[in-house]
Length: 62
Image (tube, rainbow, N blue to C red):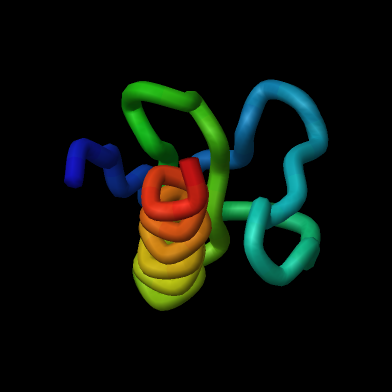
């Protein structure tokens, strides 16, 4: 996991959490590789877990 926790700052543009779609106002988590924003660490971990499951299913199917 490579991410940055940003406290007390708003994103440059209006951003929404990738997982739960809530608007991000101040304080968020950003994935370094994808530059996607998440409202907190729980949404980030849920997104990563589900992404791993989806990719794992694709590898097995091929």
